[in-house]
Length: 330
Image (tube, rainbow, N blue to C red; front, side, top):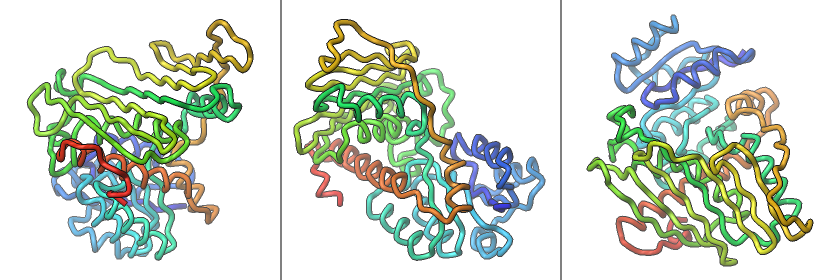
């Protein structure tokens, strides 16, 4: 049994991962730490496990094997480096860190300690993603020239997001770094290579300290363009993917949950719905498997590092009002 401690209930998905840990046959929650003691004590009481006000004391426990990190993004580096140095496996909510420097320090600490790290990038594992990857690998689109992924909700206008999600200090941003993480790593995946430059623009519709409306444009060395869109101010915006290439196009979620393909490669004159493949196991299940099997989440970690770099470049692009080269970040 993998004995897991919850490190903070700051993130909105902390209880989701609590339930996943409770449901998994190989994991159990045995302790809680939170940077806000009252919140941590309440969670620990609900779970019937000890609460630790001192994180170092918790991490020193030999009867704790791993941690689930749902702490504020700006303390991810501190929390995860300490956890790795204490020999604890780490499952964390995205983003891995707010800067590439911090992300690299986390990964270095994980590698040195030999512990297992997995970052929650859930839409990489969904059936539409595996299906679209199959379409791309089959060459039905020819050379990919443009990828656009949009994800938006009305959390700011309907006022259902927690107030601390508008903290620039804790979050490192708003709609893009939170919700836009998903379109960002999907766009990076479908482009097939790391972009070389980023230009972003942010809107502040509700006047928060963080952006609630955002677009980031990614460009690859080969001239392909990625468009990442996210917002907290849209009532009925569907999650949408469109990928265009020299020989065809694939669409998803506009607005139906169907993968539609049209390609010169097979002479299609109409849109054809593609049967969706099975998705991959959930990120938490992958983490437990890596611990049990002694394997490393190589692709997941690389994507998490790329995600941090692209987010950092987007934020810098807005702050400095210019195109940012990825080589400047790394």
